[in-house]
Length: 439
Image (cartoon, rainbow, N blue to C red; front, side, top):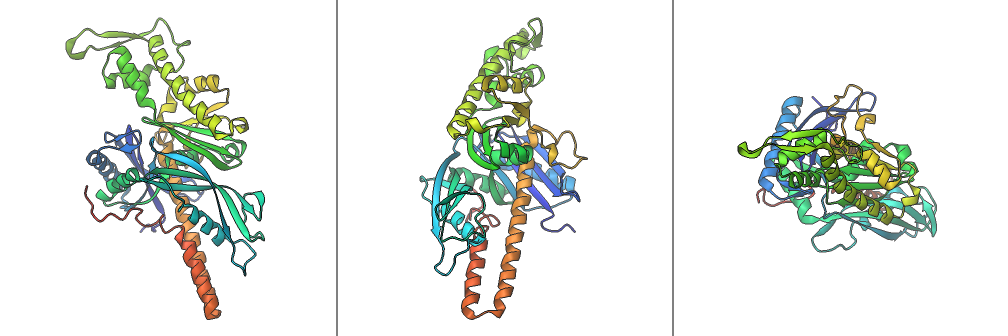
């Protein structure tokens, strides 16, 4: 019988596909994807659930398939969230230590983070992530980890990710309809970054660009810390639609053209090669040149790249990105895309595969940029569980130690224990308490 925390299940809700994965850590601490399943996504557009019934049906199909393949029945999942409603802000928050305390503890840091979750946001929005950038102790800045330092005042600069409450609730509602509980909603570019970026790249400065079907997600790292996130509401689907309109063909034919014969560089596409597309309902077939197809793709990709450049410049870290750009996601597999991005941005570019985190015997199918988000969600899931277990252990030890102290000290330790667990309270219960399980 598998232990409760031995496996992590995750669902990647994409515009073009919905993927469910279940993974475990092997003896070498590498991730082994025990089973995965994908199906077409018809109820989601640009990261937002627009059709509950279609999304529920797709989730149920992949979940049942994974449970059948793996023989593991799970009820708790980690889910990615993206969409054009995602925005980020910078904020500074501060707390003062108790009069009888002069050493900063992990409790103080957690209190500061938890307090930042309470800052006011717009009506209909909620805070998804509070990401510390740097700490300040008694006006001494640039501190990465303040725990153990002497001080009376603790401040921090935060990168805060905000999303629509309705969008998050709809994701949770879809999961609940399949008898699943969402342990945590994770911003998709952060999950993808976890799967494909190296620690050295995060340290040196890097831009993670996840080109999906409906959105292009961005996460910028420097000095090992995420500094900027953004979701661009354009992805591979707009390219497919451009081909459909430009060539007057069906959408499925346009997608097949893009995948099989497409290129992001029109200048190097052969002029003498054409592909013949069958006519609709017996009409005359259409002949489309490789070069014309490539120029259609390049035109739209250049627009998406301009949005990427804007986000990089807006982040304030454009001159600190020694590791350049890492492309991932299904859209990154487009031919010559890395060359076009390098030409337009001037940064070094590579395609990001999740192979560094995967077990050596992982299949070629799963070791693909198209699965970066799903694999990153599983990795993030293990991180959350390990953090929760560690904090729970510390709380239990604190409770045991308090048995030999005075009543006042015991109460103090109980308060600290409750504060410690409060941070993870939202992470490992149902995020949204729904009174009804149906729309």
